[in-house]
Image (tube, rainbow, N blue to C red):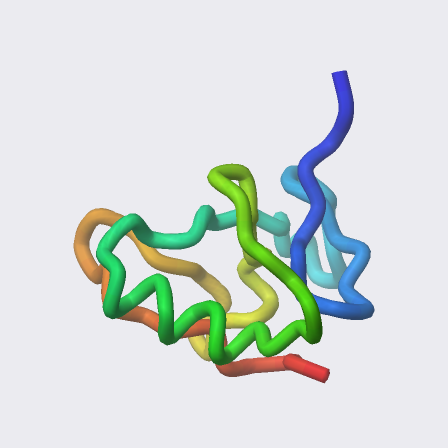
Length: 82
């Protein structure tokens, strides 16, 4: 069984990886709501890239360190995007 990696260009983080200071990386799938999904795709901005149902972004690309969740689905990845 393979690992799921972050889709942001140049990011090689995967779910469960332990970072500095004991920070655990989590992956967050693209939202299903079309207007939020499009905002995520614009933020990721990879050339000639088509997202799949398995596309994920790691927690390091969110200002607060956590991605979208059931409480706040409108968060957009904006940190550490190359």
